[in-house]
Image (cartoon, rainbow, N blue to C red):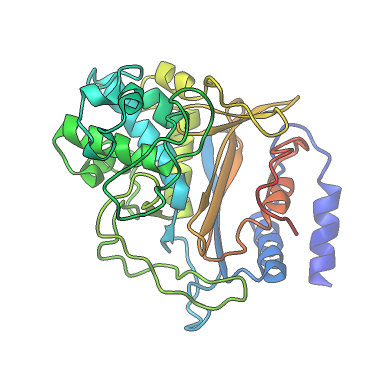
Length: 350
């Protein structure tokens, strides 16, 4: 009976003014709990933005299905590719400091031995990496190989690439003469008081464990070195603070954020409403313009979407292979715009 009530409340609120749906924290939590139960997701952490500010932070379920330990707002999740927008922000901070140019070949900053054999690779710029037009693969076919080959000519087409972000990481390390975790701490974690976030796994006690589609627990990945494409460990509360900074910047030039939110060359795909900016996805609808990204480390899945106009949106993290099966329902629960992510069908939905 409780979940029938939730369903009726959600239906009754699907028509409203503005882009954000306003529910009580209790109703949001009950709805999210129901979704995770139906989708066989052990645990989920949710952070909402309303009017450019962090609003509801909700945690449901278990850190570990085996131990039955519950999630709280300080439980750390693997962010997977939600790492990339933070790395993009750091790159733009270097642009702001005059240490990096978006359209200058990265080879002029750092000689990356893995791609020196390919002359075309010398054309790759920070803009190409951030917009996924570098021509590099997502990951090299042999992960421990010291040779990295282009898949397509740089700047010719959108091709999602984690390897590009690893290359940019090496460039930024060289420019700053610093460890990348320290760079992110300086530019993001410290200014935004993201106290439960790190690019490596170090002295974290309150963390979620990944699960497969049947809720079988998997071995926790604990990175000791930074991977700029995927190694961020964070909470929904911390990440919501970062999203609030993106849509209402206080620690970076607003013109650089506008550049980040600008559609880049050769990046529109899907149903034509989805494109790429610098380090983030863009979603254009009749009623709005949104920034978004998804994360997928197989047993951890995550997502965020925020209106750049109204500052309304959300992020959520799960410790489940099924984590993105509820994405459409999370969008409909939170936002009014029915065209959001239309045509993006990467994950089968409930």
